[in-house]
Amino acid sequence: MPSHAERRTVAHKPDDLFNLVADIESYPEFLPWCSGVRVRERKTIGETEVVIADLLVSYKMFRERFRSRVTINRAARSIDVDYVNGPFKHLDNRWRFEPHPSKEDEETIVDFLVDFEFKSRTLERMVGGLFDRAVRKIVTAFFSRADALYGEPAHLPLDLPS
Image (cartoon, rainbow, N blue to C red; front, side, top):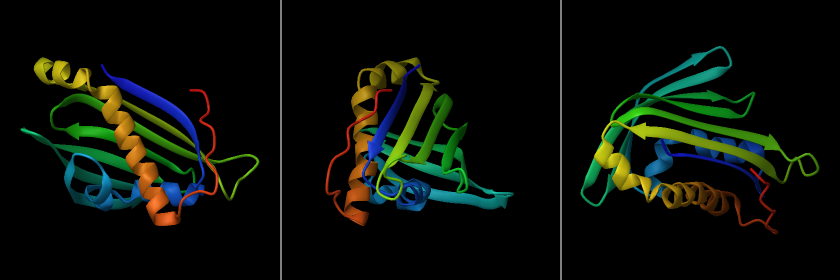
């Protein structure tokens, strides 16, 4: 089961980063291998917004659609993605955005986790060797998008140990 967790300080405001990740419909514009998104349902439950969405992933001859339930909690600045159906046995993805203690309006501590397992052992073996590099490319795409939308940071913060 591939999994990846990282904790990183990013030189953008917490609300800006949160809004970027919550904007699921924009993923095909900047996310590698994401060729389409279809929001099937969107509802508000208390302080959270729940979105059921299909994501189309394309890489070379590989083309798969999977559905997930995205729970967006603006008050907590958290986004949780849970698997509904598609090529996985399971998929969990978590984002947390905390203001940096000393630079609350300028920097964010981002906690990111992704954990999944494919139903197909062949697909699991094929992706397994590329997983770490692919996840890093996806995470970097989010932060590069933040730079494009909100401006390049004046300084680059250091990554925090995981």
